[in-house]
Length: 104
Image (cartoon, rainbow, N blue to C red; front, side, top):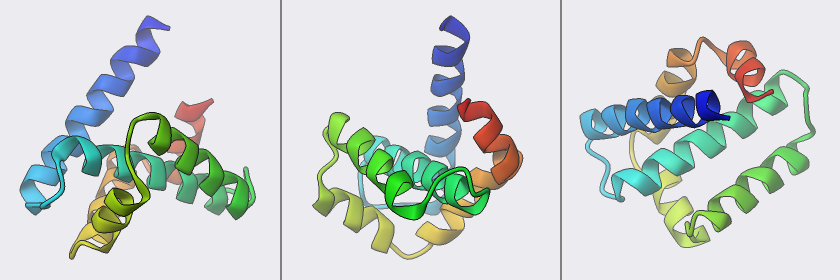
């Protein structure tokens, strides 16, 4: 449990660093949370571990539990460069296969 918490902190710090480099307008915390949730969903879908609706539902519930509204989520996802940010995050995690392995 402690290792998982430490890993989560490192992931958020890594995404925060990417967010600062990209200059996103939304708060760093919100951008990091949306990026992590959407990357996880994308990789679960791409690796055929979950169907799209199920993966997106998990992402939505996670973001809601963290206080991220649909409006905030959409603002982050529609920001210029967001797609590149998410892809860099996935790449930093070792690609989708490795990201999904870490989720288990």
